[in-house]
Image 1 (cartoon, rainbow, N blue to C red):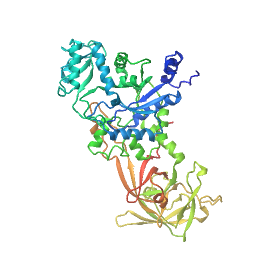
Image 2 (cartoon, rainbow, N blue to C red):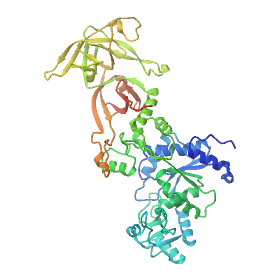
Image 3 (cartoon, helix red, strand yellow):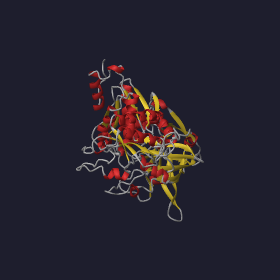
Image 4 (cartoon, rainbow, N blue to C red):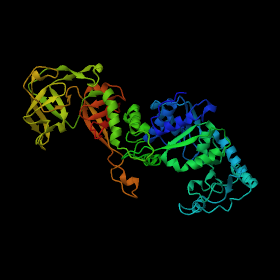
Length: 548
């Protein structure tokens, strides 16, 4: 068979295995899975894992299971299952089957009994604290449990009594019998099953013992016939244990192979479901889908296009070594996608009235919907000679090389005319109340005639007669830049991560459909929604600090 060209080390391994005939018995079909635990919403770090796994499925015409690794009933729920399914579909990925680790509880129990019968597992009465204390250190071997040499018959009886609910939580565990002197601490008789009298969101009260993740995860892979377990680098030290469990499971070859890749780390971004859940539970944010959250549903709610997230992961690439990616790179990918698809519109923050004293009447001006796409065409914008401009676009005391409006200076109103500021009205507190300006009719935008009138800059505006009140929401990172050793994440939380600003917007924004993305001229990319009036929520600013 002709193999696809390998573009990273994972594909290179798969190609080598295919060439060696490892998968001839299963028709050379590659099986992968994406296995999140349904204990929270997926975040942007999971997008990389999805891109890698779904990428392998597509490249090798294989199959992919979306599996919920639901072995911790105290923290899992259908809310999280549904959010994961929605996130996968929103990103445009298609899985072959939706499965659950809890589908295999009977089979996992059967395999655990096989471990006992083969002398590879024993029931231990040590508490969790005692197990930790006897595990040893990186330089000292662990101390074997006093229950390690129980007979097969006794272990089988005790394990079945655990399953029958005879013992309280924490009274006993089933441990794998491996090597208490192993240099890899994960191999020092890890726990396989623990007692937990907690109902499961799918199986109810059927079980009061639950398999540990380190056991259930690899064996579930083997049950499903997964060929490659593609996971992030923190599981590298677990690989010997992964192999130990599947090799003794009695399940047919080819057994799955674990391959690790570097996880996605982004500056100033929380990448832990545990901490993200804390933000939700403590109401620091409005929910898992708050637009400030790095969850996939938060990014969706913010207006980030799914193709931008995939582009970002493709640009970052697949590597073995730990690294941290600058958030500016993600923002740059979002801009690249939105620049091509978002219509242009105008809104002004901190509005200041500008009156063109020599203009009368009203007209409609042509406005490009998207200058990067000529096929997008134009739309009409009404102009009456009385407009709002952004307060930051005028200065009574301009600094050197100032390119916006000042008294006696000129500026072009986007899509309209060049105007000159002749006078300034101030209120009793000395704040700018109104700018009185002259316009030059021969400078109408689109005119090719030489007028001799020059403008240093171009600014956005909103007509006073037709403009509407709007609310602009701007966001910053949930984390401040500073990070010190032993610093609690709560000390890094940005208490000013969201700002709400009253603004004036052109009516086109109010009339557009909710969820529509726009580039607000010279301001940023925003998503329009309705909440008692038009709300313009920032997707990403226009400022690009990423060096492509």
